[in-house]
Image (cartoon, rainbow, N blue to C red; front, side, top):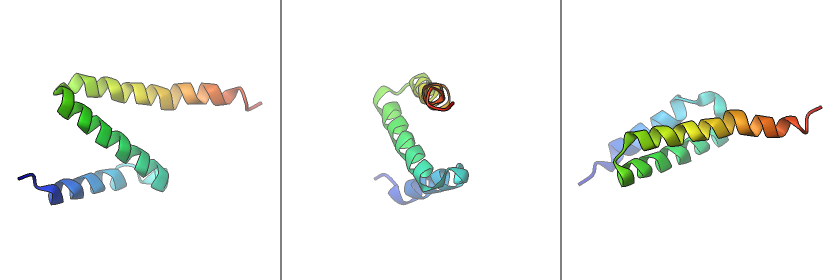
Length: 74
């Protein structure tokens, strides 16, 4: 039997305390990304795959989106 209570508690604390400056929307975004990363790890059993997925989401969030938005800021 999987102890879902402690897992849910740890997940909630991680999402709310590690990124409080992002607000509710940011916490939901981090939560979805964390769940997807966990499912990816359970499916592939490969930590490097999760690291690569995390790097790709960071590149998208911090490089691609700002470069796209800069064409509308003048």
